[in-house]
Image 1: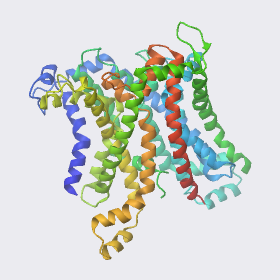
Image 2 (image 1 turned 30 degrees about the vertical axis):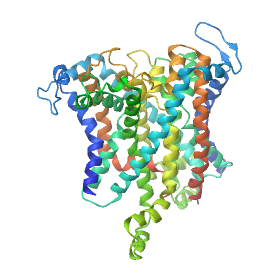
Image 3 (image 1 turned 90 degrees about the vertical axis):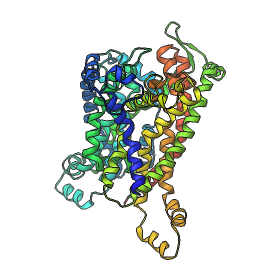
Image 4 (image 1 turned 120 degrees about the vertical axis):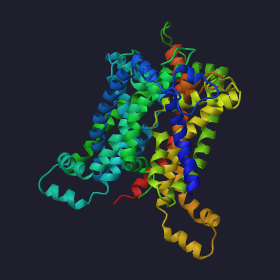
Length: 265
Length: 279
């Protein structure tokens, strides 16, 4: 098993590490044959180039878009998850199915009309534009995760709050959200990562460089025919670093969120 | 007061209807019109679809999309199953191995695309040094590399789903079979695999639906050259490059129908599981 585990780790990590090494090489060393494993003449040229192309501006935009998406998605999802898991609701199966299906709509099918709608309200090429589809596309998974956490909360806790005269909204905010805090946290991380990584809508809705997020910025970085690999690699390392930190710190939460609902616990 | 509970779902539903259902209906409706940036809309019936069926480029995109979905999903399930079995075993440092498996999943697809594009690059790629092939000039290799990158990126997800399934199988069951004299292969085939079926099914459906939406890899690695165009990329080009709205929305309707068919199967499998667990 140890040997197999080593192969798995190598396959997972090596491609990214190899690219990370390229971010520290100058153009000559990148073109050098045979290729060097560890940079002989390490340089930050690539990082300087990426900074000049505007990587830190894109990063700030990504942060704003991902944070706003998370702040909108979680309260909306909490309400829906409460209704779906703890109240007597007619046609629950149908609603659950609809919510699930909504997360699977192909981006291209939404793109044309969504672009027109956002243009009509003057939001195309603003940071608010991609937030709209991100909220609707992250809602289903967030609802799913929160509902599976809410289900575990004992009925007595809810009953006690109700006897004290609390309505559903109060119960949700004062009782369910604090008790299910790990679930809320998990849903928030996954929503944030989704918005940070999303490419298609960002590409279509943000064509001006000053509002671009990381993925479209990085994807369209080089000219048509030349690849400044050092710069591209540096930009990729910077865009990925926060995610790697999140994975290292929050591994358990991420895994439980990804698999919630798929397998009965 | 109790009556108010279900209404807490209303804001989320409103968002889903406005930002997911309305756009889809809009796209299906638009696909029945001929409209470009220069020409005003006129009724076209199914003309766009007829044009699409005759278009060799669109046919190629459909073909590669199907190849991509079929090949990458099967490979992801096989590697995912193998990885899950390894991660399920007890050994020292298992937590570290699990964390490292998550790395490809966490990396943005755009970044994963650049990584593999670099490894197979004509001038600087290490694989070009190993074997002097112009990888992205060959349709076969270009397609293979795109599939490889997808398998690398999404295999952790299937592995985790299958691992979660493995963890629900009671150890006593396997132990009992061992005492009855069943070897490792028989224990795997007769006990583990059948009990894993639900988890594998969910992974299969979920990955199939997601694979139909492939776009980022193709955009970054080849821009659809060397026979690597896929439906979402074809639709993107028609809508946002050529501004042929009728054609673009007709392509997006085809993608939608393919995904919707899979979704119906998925939705019928999964919510029943969530409901079963209900009080």
